[in-house]
Image (cartoon, rainbow, N blue to C red; front, side, top):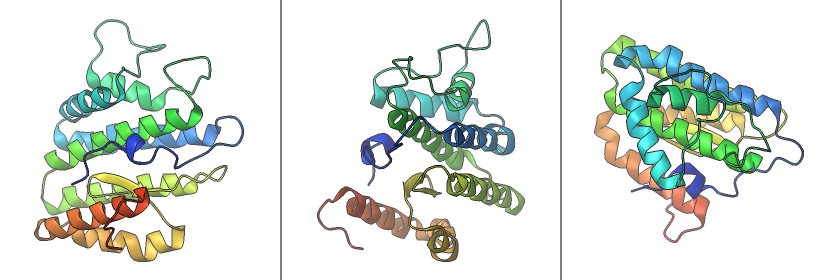
Length: 208
């Protein structure tokens, strides 16, 4: 079973050779838009998923993010903080942002936790499932479309994992993970994700 958050699973997975790419900030805001605008209305709003996800996230990271230059006065809900964390621009002078690589991995980790919590709350009727598939497909497309750098991640069934080239993702991996999304393949899904995680991290007994 995979328990580590993304930034602990893949600490050296990306490298930005120059300044933090503006396209990456745009990509994070697009992911936030999918989460908050497209998906959250189908579970009665984002607060429950964000509260659970943010609590898990700051326990692993050790400090809060999304509080600098907060645009809303008064009470800050976890959903508001998560939205701000995913949407704020990278600032090299902000110590809580860390390096550009850490900034991105921390926020993609938060997005992963929010999506995983939303998936647990998601309705099982056909129309809602199509909305979910469409949202996940857009997130994966947005990650692939960043041209200034390579963001090697693909979201499927509650987790981001390292992705191969775009053609393999579209033709092989996405149809495969869509099949495993069915509850009857739950154990196979978990085994495959753990095997990929073991392969990516160089652990023993990777079965791929």
